[in-house]
Length: 247
Image (cartoon, rainbow, N blue to C red; front, side, top):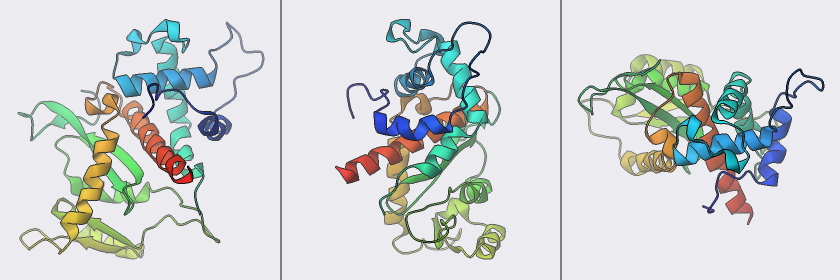
């Protein structure tokens, strides 16, 4: 990680810029802060977990309110989900609830689906007391098209691995309808052999996600803004891996 990871490099900006809505040429009022500066302000908050109003003005990213409103605008337009799809390839507000692990304090938790190498494909947040099994299909449906081979980009994996927290016969039936093999341990039965080693891949990806300090503790009351940070963080993890593989 560089000393200033919130700086957007030229290659990444070349992917993001076409996804952003253009401002009208003759919009009333003062000229808006450029999008690439606002994005760096959003990343500064994501990496350092500071309040929006504490964003240093001397960095030139605009005010915290400016960056916050720009993030809201981009999330509504689905910018970060689109970024996840177009990246180059090698060939106490809503959704909070009493945490069962923290003396029932209101909170939320992250749910994640990744590939066999730990590359995050989709991340979402839900109340801390929401059962993992209720989010399984939402994660599968959120997987973006994966290109890189001739033909139509794939959206469905061949198999889905999960621990006993995802044990559900209705989910298994739904996955099979989508031609996805469910490899999920059943409650009351021994774990599927070797699943623990594969489960570690997901935990490792969670650790990468929570290196973004803004995701360690949720401050946003609105779920869609917190999910915007999750989606942006997942895209950055993918981007780093691709850059590392190319170097």
